View 1 (cartoon, helix red, strand yellow):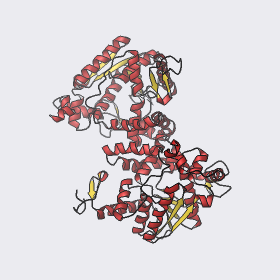
View 2 (spheres, each protein chain N blue to C red):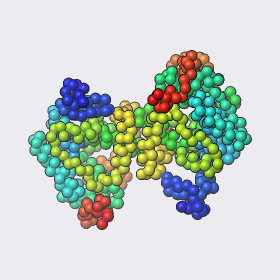
View 3 (cartoon, each protein chain N blue to C red):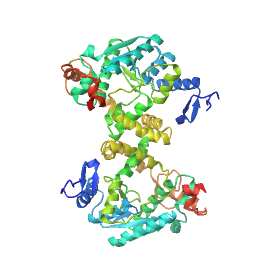
View 4 (cartoon, each protein chain N blue to C red):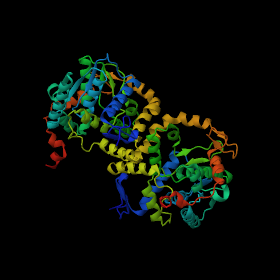
Length: 318
Length: 318
């Protein structure tokens, strides 16, 4: 297996590019793909104040690393979700990497700053934990970026993530969600600009990036995510990708190219209809006076904290 | 396993309806689903001259049967594709069923009327046989309907077919194809009205219909269709359907409901841009003077006929 560029010994095969790469040229490819996305979607410049949402997993640490490599001076934000040992150890990975690259890592804990955590919120709402988790993270990301004067918020969504979400939204033809699924959302009414610079790189490529760069990350999946529908969507798409490499990238990139323009009016209607939360002041599409995060917080803070085990299979079996 | 309606002994479970049915009530359900589609999309009335495209397979024979049961007086059209024994035996099933319901079956053979067949066309074009086959069938369906004064052409596309095609088009975001993928296409410029009354019923339901009604049909898949991408799309969708029954129906029906209206302008632009084939007079979207069917016929008729074996795996291994 030889590197397409230098004919040296390759360390990774990328069927979608129909090529193999050595460590150095694989890293060069990743950097170029991210640079291309940043340029194509006018995501950021080196003079921006950039905040990376860091979970301690491969994607967010790789993103932070790549942005710094490309000369974008980004700090990190870790949100403590209170998911037992999983949260404890993911914070350690995030801190370790921040020290290594000598950048600031902001840490916000849901439990200490908002009086609840994800397991409790999931229990109280009776919905899947991923729903309360995603919504809480978005809220804390937005608030922290604005409070600390960052104008760009970058998240580590990779190609597989975007493909699975797009596929899920497409299965229901949820036009509102589809309209919002862009690699960049401009700053608006108290929300920072949000960017996803990894959308041209796959999950496997980000794992390889971390291994080749010697970045330690939390390998375990979140214990609350099992049974998540996106996992089934990923499996289905992987089945097709295996037979026709490149299908996933084509699905996502041609969506941006051909479909997203047709949804432009939808996006603008949605922005125009935002109001402000009466409790925290954040923009909200909710018809109630409070935003979804504040409602979740109100319901969850009065409950006893629950342990992760209660929500995982291990807990349910007891 | 008990019938949801009469509590009698059930013969089929339908996970997407979360219910089981006896033979009589399953048939009633199928008839109602078809009637609903016909009404919702204003497909036809009992005074129309209806032609059913009949392949000898379960879907087209079930469609013909159901339309007659519902009081729509439909005749059949069988197109001989020249796919060896497969074509010979599928014609027998079609004839047998026509005799049983005492309706006319028109038979058009590509070889005797147009001097070529599907295996030869596939060989000449170097593309997958399904592409030459689909295009030839559409052409012969349209011409025969008009020549014989039928104003509605009905095809046996079931829910699984439509889902697989929609999924394929969506994976590439092929907006032109997506815009056309409607259960009814109105008559226009020398094309009959085209309807797909089975879009609310699955492949498995159509097989069950035939078994319960004692309809003999060709069970084998077309020997030239193996490796067809739609088969991979069907497998991927089946994986998701198994975990979340009803996903396929929701994907297709919510497409019609929410997405198709956004593509309306696209459809109308396409109709406005049709011209006429200089050779056969059929409407064509081709920029050349001849329609795709005439071009295929011109290229294929001068070639020696090829045998099916050459195109199947069996043939390729020789």
